[in-house]
Amino acid sequence: MPAVRALRQVMDADLGLEESQRLGPRLVRALNKTSVEASGLAWLYTKCMGKTEICESLVAEMMAGLYARHQYIGVMRMAQTMVRNAVNADIVRVSLASICKQRKHEKTRRMIVRHQTGFMDEYRGSGCPFRQLARKLVDQLAKRDPLLVTAAILSKLLEIEILSVPITTGLPRQVYPWLDSFTRYGVQPSVHAFTILMHAYLRRGDSEYAVWIYQGMLRGSITFVNAGRTESMQMPEPNDVALATVAQVWCQNREWAKVYEVLSVSQRLVTRTVSTLVDDGNVQEAEDVWLKYGCRSGFEDLATRVINDRALSKLVLGCTRMKDVGKATGYFRIACEYARLSKTPVSHLTGLFNAVLRCVLDNAPMVDLGSLEGRLDLEILRIATFHGVRFDGDTYSVLISHLSRIARTNVLDNVARTMQNLYTQLCHEGLALDDMMVSHMVPVWVHLDLSQLVTAYWRLHTRDRPPHKIAQVKRHIIYRAEDWGVVDRVVKLLV
Image (tube, rainbow, N blue to C red):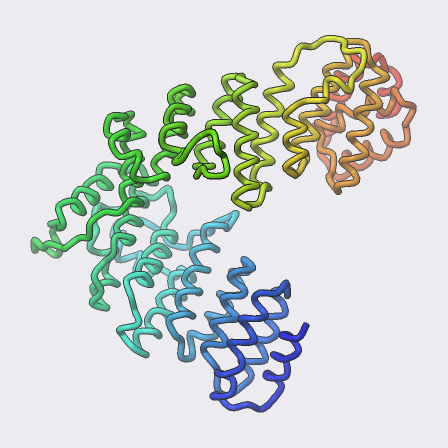
């Protein structure tokens, strides 16, 4: 790859800071547009750090490349090294954004902060590594030039500090301590900062204080007590995001009159309203809201329409709960077509497809079709196949479970062959059988005289498992084997 070879020559050559600043960032930008792995950028970074003079713009471009590849840990490692050197605003922005992403995507978020009496004092002295790294980066940037510390950077710092607090911990009703960074650097808090605070209090169940902050934004100022003194703070006007955030309270309190007055302002609010209505079981009203506010152009011409696809996904799930097969299939088709026209990935549609498929199959009549192909010639499957929606393990589990129930209608040979074909297709896609699918497939393999598959999978699923789990799987298999009339043969193979 020409960009890689050229950048390696720049790294290996004994170039000065001026030449590195001129050539390095341009080559890294070209490299970021290619499919080079993140490990390649990390190697280039180690080469760069071995030099006495570091090109900050080059490091910033490398960190941006890692961030685009979702390598947030790599960006944070670079930031930990750069915090001892000079940093620019681009490095700080990418580092803070990576810390936020890493905190949000952690599967087990280890909270280091302890919360007892004296919440804020103990929090400031806590050893949260994410918060400490973010603080050091901002302080290092302020040493270089205080004017580089903007409201956007401090808002990201505030978000990191909020993320360091466990979600189960209630926050004190104090705005001023959270905005200490803005006061220290002489920066006016932005609407983004107050929206972060509103969202934090809402997530912890203190909707009253979140509404108080929003009302202060409407008034333009708030008054509070700090160290025994009454002080006031100027506040910016709320934007659409702030309005959508406070409207969550109206949705929770079912104050629909207030919600409908501002639905046209924010699509986030439309999504929240549709989601709440669906959760309440009012799918018809949710459909009316989406049709009126979620489609901003003509409904007939899909190519000229701007659709709120998040609200549409929630509406599809609501139709499946109401067992409305026609609407669920129709809206799923719209979601697929809009994803194709907007050139967005269809990977997020797999879960939606599984819900609609389960709804369609559960509401299909349990009759002897004679020809099983007619039962699987479903419109929902044709839609998913046409638009390239990928089948996952849940998809095959739904299909195999449905076919196993059809075995009671005495079309065992057709059902067995179809289930075996699905198993073969599942294996070709690199998917594995879970316990439930094994319980459905074992009687099929016995019926088709494929006892070697039964023995292999039984050994695989009983290896290093507790006895009660093995007994549970065996009960499921024997229960399914009764529909196929192969209980005795299954029991002999599972001994």
